[in-house]
Length: 416
Image (cartoon, rainbow, N blue to C red; front, side, top):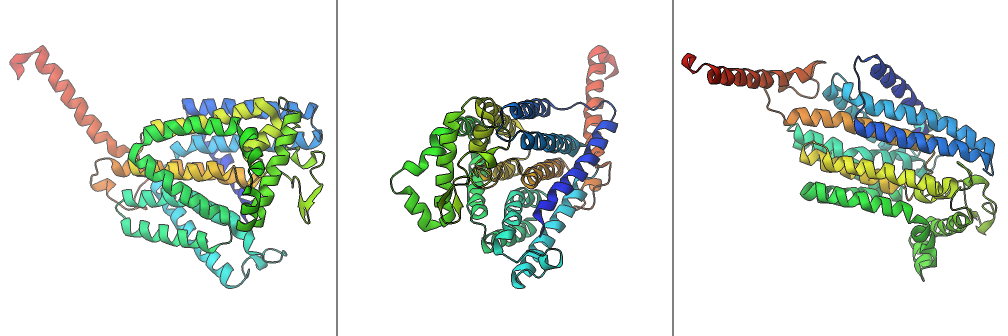
């Protein structure tokens, strides 16, 4: 009901995760987290430096400070996901939260804003639940795949159906399209994950680097603008915004106009049509926004960040079904950045960070479900105590004893 509150939620969760990570003895970050931290750090440093030539230097410095905190808590959450003592328990709470969220959305729609009116003075609009629909879309595939891996196919079907119906009942057009895109990519990943994810590494880099030559020129395609307007008036406006952003990128292709300076670009407030300026706050396209504000260096860092995430998906050792579902979620997040929100918006970065954390936690639960089970590991979502990972100790001990016995018989055959 209050999607922008996720910025406060992810900040609190990130502080807890940071405390957990820093208190762990001998904690070492994985290579992918180190590379991600370096890329985010480079993006942050370049964004801070852009205040020197920004058309709105104060705004650039303020946003750089906010991003420093958001990047830090996002990395802390990613690192802390592997240290959660009871991933199944946390996953069970996530599923409860999704069910409550779907119920709250149903009540909100049935009462035309009855719930939100208790905490907000704003008039009810169906579009104010668009952020909720994108959050549902991000989490439904991994959550359903996890339930299947735990032998709960019926509950997985119910969750997927209820979530899909909720997304398609809500007003947000983007979430509907993204859900279909995620499903298609997930199916491809399930059939050939290394190949598909590897190809997506190159595609993601190409999409970001070539954005000023692709997205920014779509408006020039004959008839496309009229077709977009007939589909949805905001779609045609989006093409005009991208075209304007492309023209401004060409003026400063190397340095950009400064971090989060999109709202201050000269001519951005000029009207195209009634109520439609050339650049309302941001280009609604992450690649164009990074190009516009941070130039070629920022776009390169952003492209590398996308590449390492897809590359990690190609190599990760998760159960095939869950890995494909995580790829569907990544597709939704990736494409969502190119069609909807401002890339520096706190609630959007918070949603992406928290969704990544939850997917990593669910991956641990799915991985444990794929291991050989014993009596202590055959419990449901609530049945994983803080030390549930010790269930792999018995196979390890047996392999160790077997190896020792083998070596002993090789050294002294008379004792066989």
